[in-house]
Length: 306
Image (tube, rainbow, N blue to C red):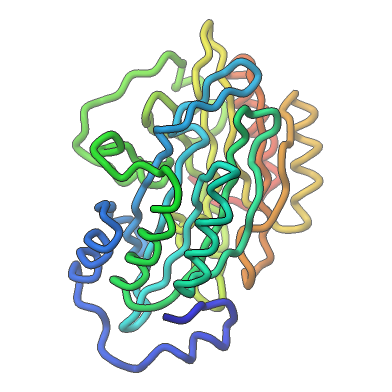
């Protein structure tokens, strides 16, 4: 197994035949111990929400789909597979998980918080690796086995985030205590209900690359916005904006002008083009008011047309 962290590393991919369709996905599902979902862009994505964690922030108990969703996204490159992901961990899980990732040749590309004042405060490890699908999946299974991340039936049918939810079809309509039509109108985008959370995914206008490979939305390049109802038309919001350097401070100003707190600013990747910054945010207020504030921030970004 080899870690893919530079453009030059792409030359290490052997010139053998491409992976057989679906077979590589089954190898991942078997090795990881959890099936995933086929996503646009040739991505196979596995959601692993931390349904075991009880996290509160400013008196709001956070739903797993709101801010506690681990995920792993796999994409074939020639006869091998690239994986990127975001693992939600408690503080005491970080060292053992990181040790197993390192031993298995999977790179850690970021370690940080997303929230302020959360209790207990979860941490997020971003990972990137390159190799045979079964080997990658087995290594990731072992790393996550050093945490309390659920793999069983309690997570079945709960996509980790908006990207996975958007790919789910044919499921029963979910209800939520929010005026989602008003949110859609304010944002200029529509979302999906997932696990009691209204999730909106907004692609950037350009297609970012990591080590020379295009990073589809399902591998973490899309803007994510989550609304969790808190009663009487109000909602808590969080998510992350995907920004280029020139967009960072205009977006901060737009959020602050609308009563939305910026909680973290950081990178997720090591060799991204253009260099991307990920900004996380938080507020708990009237849902339509917050959607209007988020729209003001989106207007300062280069995003794809609806």
